[in-house]
Length: 277
Ligand code: PXL
Image (cartoon, rainbow, N blue to C red; front, top):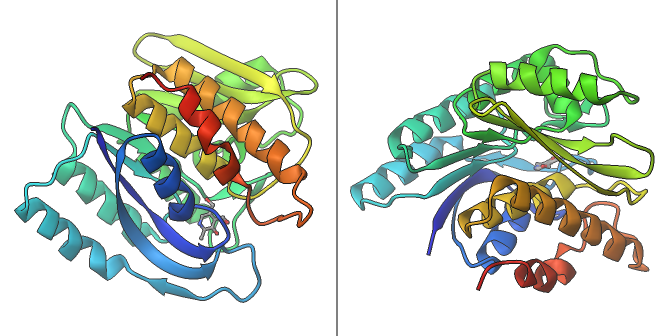
């Protein structure tokens, strides 16, 4: 069984980061080791959230793992809190990464043209230095613009997306995948670019016209799980895009209308049907 380390916060209530990554990746048949960077009462889109920073725990926890000869097939990072934490994650990449470790960075820090409340532009630019070390990065268009200095556009064409992808791989990663890319009316999905092969991959499915929080974490978790189960990048992006759209469809039917996160739990059986035996 493959083993993934995922480094993100625990938002106790709100269905994002570790409370999404752990159940999804585990259910996909991949051992999931967690390194919580902070404990929050809720994610940061609720008013008055509490936050206990755990960054002083990262070094002793990972030192113990090293002593126990624990290794990982992939390291997947999501929402991180501070520049210091980004530096600590770089150290973890150095300590635990080798040519067989997939380094997967989701620089979760904003959406819809804006950064989340806890971040500023200087943090966003610093996140680019973590992306530089990754094999695969999966920013949305907002995060890509903050990291590369490109203008954020709501209306765009394929040339704009290709330019963003080129700017992203210039930061240093082998492959960049932009999420939330819509190249025709009523469609959305992801477009990737592999610097080494020069190949672009595009996957578009039907746009479900609703916005929920935590869908980026659902998407990234499914991509990581699928890559670990042996699907290639194109197949993994397709599965993640289709299943993320399905979580939104299911959530829209929920009479409680939970704005804070999607009902990914209901879609787990469908994700598993698409994995190799
Ligand atoms: O990836 C979304 C996310 C994760 N963790 C925390 C957040 C958010 C988005 O706002 O606030 C704490």
